[in-house]
Amino acid sequence: MELFTMHPSLTVDKLARAVRRSMSDDSYPGFCTACGKRHTNVEPDAERYPCSSHACKGSPTVYGAEQLLLLVQA
Image (tube, rainbow, N blue to C red):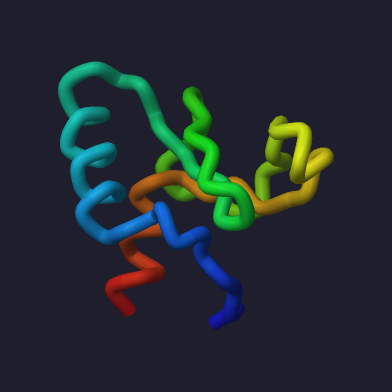
């Protein structure tokens, strides 16, 4: 398993809420593990998508919310 650091704003509670919310609104949330930015239309099992924030400059640090939830629970 790949080790990475998570932005402190990405808590298990926040990820779980995003996953639950996506079940009713099809928003497909994802989060950047470097800056914490929320992204939309990210596949649930996405890993290493580019982040669009100015700070990350396209770094491959965006994961689907469901995938992140699985990774932090492991």
